[in-house]
Length: 85
Image 1: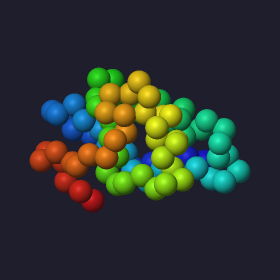
Image 2: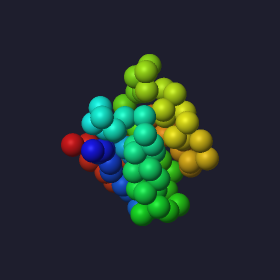
Image 3: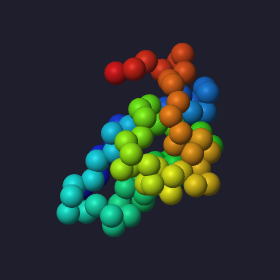
Image 4: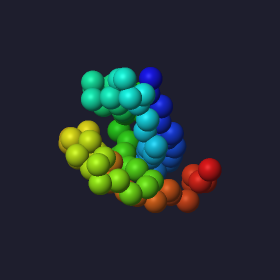
């Protein structure tokens, strides 16, 4: 139903998410927001970012989902401790 790629650096207290996908039947039902909240709950205290830019139609989602979240899911580069891939 929902998938997302993510990377963590506990040393830097940073997390990155990218390419969230919700099956069309389940879109706009809060599943993605709930999944991201669960991910944050599993890794408390991290600042959360995205690796890519936000597509125009996804900007409202990221703005709403990022409210009150450390890092606000703003675009951020990987730290030196984490490799891309």
